[in-house]
Length: 165
Image 1 (cartoon, rainbow, N blue to C red):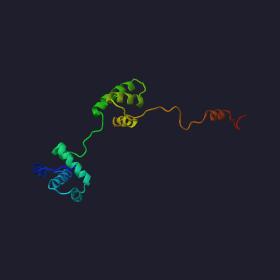
Image 2 (cartoon, helix red, strand yellow; image 1 turned 30 degrees about the vertical axis):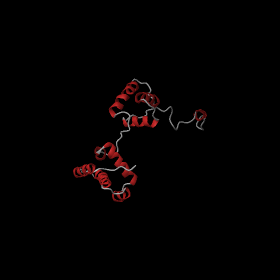
Image 3 (cartoon, rainbow, N blue to C red; image 1 turned 90 degrees about the horizontal axis):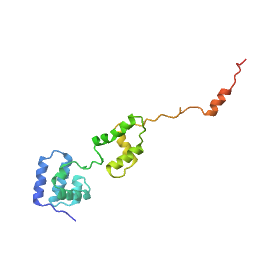
Image 4 (tube, helix red, strand yellow; image 1 turned 180 degrees about the vertical axis):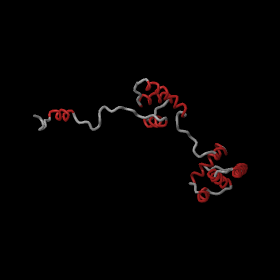
């Protein structure tokens, strides 16, 4: 389906171009203006550098959402489930538990996080949440990484040297 733009919409686009100061918005408005003047998508694509399918997408977005959709930033979504403050408040309960000396695991945090947001999420999402709030893994190692085996320790105790009298 090919969307057509009216003369009122063309004048609205031209007024917005006069007030605009952003070069990316200017490019989108120019594509809309050319489309309103009856220029083919392939010709608009060569002038603006956009894909012809994207020009159709711009026109549809303009018709459905209005001029504000063209003037805003290209990306619209914030893909986080919670704001930074909400995440911080969520992690405070685990901070209290950790300060009491109890072990807090990512599995436990993930289960509580999924319950809070109302759907499942991956481990990566929880680890990014923890990194964003400067949490780090603190785990004491059970033994030194270069410690000799028990057999080697026993063997060294039984060694005799030539210095004994």
